[in-house]
Length: 278
Image (cartoon, rainbow, N blue to C red):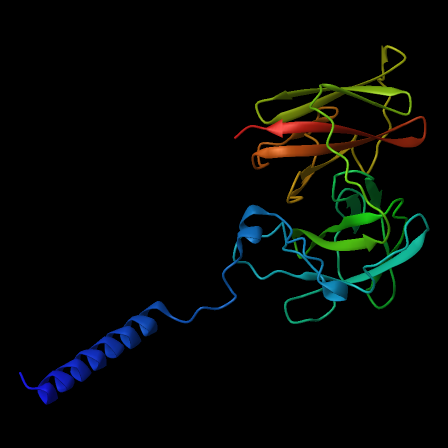
């Protein structure tokens, strides 16, 4: 074959390759942002703290669903001083969501925890006439915190998170080892984990506490946060069983459990480290 013939044959081959590539591209369709990221699949916040518009995935929605988002007015707060945290919930079109349903006694729960799973707070923001939310928050020490807005609207539960920053020297604390008992405020709490259920027994001075008072419409409230990615689980108590919770939906990993109960007209919080088996 002559040199001119070889060049012509090579050009024809390239044309055929480009034609096949174009056909394959049309068949595969365009790459878009509609497919959820690995964070959305695992229920883990992205943790990058993207400023005043920072928001994480919606841990309460199925993969691929259209998520609302949390938009915070401020994400940097001074450590050790009460300040106002203001935020709103927006739908996928950017419109402010105003209608929220009562879930465990409140229309909005705000969980704030430092990223090493310390300094836990459970707050209940107030909503103004324009639909915006605000809460008085104290970040007690320097570090990066995660705030979760936990709510229900249009019959769907959502948990949206945003990073909060408190400037200063920060030394993360290692999680305590897993133990079956924990103490706080003069109360001792025993944990029994069995077949995806978590059951707690409260005692004081060596005697069982049998007169717990209702807290948020139940005998207790439990939040589970996974170490590393802060995957969030807000677990409801099982009907008719005091301080017993269903946890079988939790993904494998190391969790910090924050149990809250009310007794003697005060809310008490105890924390456990708990391994969910792989």
